[in-house]
Image (cartoon, rainbow, N blue to C red; front, side):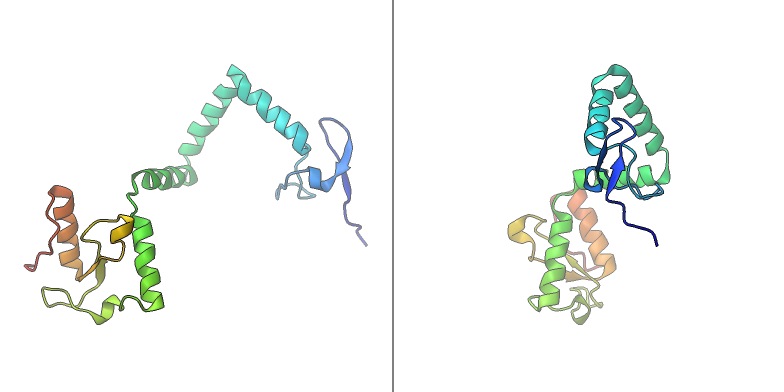
Length: 160
């Protein structure tokens, strides 16, 4: 029967250390990094403080950006940077619907008379206006968003 690993030898400093001194690495046979945390930190610091190391980091970052995972990560970062509180406002509305403070949008109608499909934050996404929403159909919601970005007017268009 296989015994549990209690200690491991660091390949850098050649010392036996408890497994808590090694970072996890799923691709390794034992599931742990081959360097201990202290040696890994020293190697990372040494790499980041030299010009060659910084150049390698830039090259790795550029290579990562060319992968699908890197592009998705960059897109999430761009969204976070331009997010004006929109995601927090949407989450607040979802929570208010779930707790019964706001009715489900499917039970409401748009001012144009159609079935409402979305809540529109007509006063913006700031904290004090997160629950100041209008139920709108998809067409009116798109028109209201277009008006918001093109001008200061934020009223719902009732013409389709």
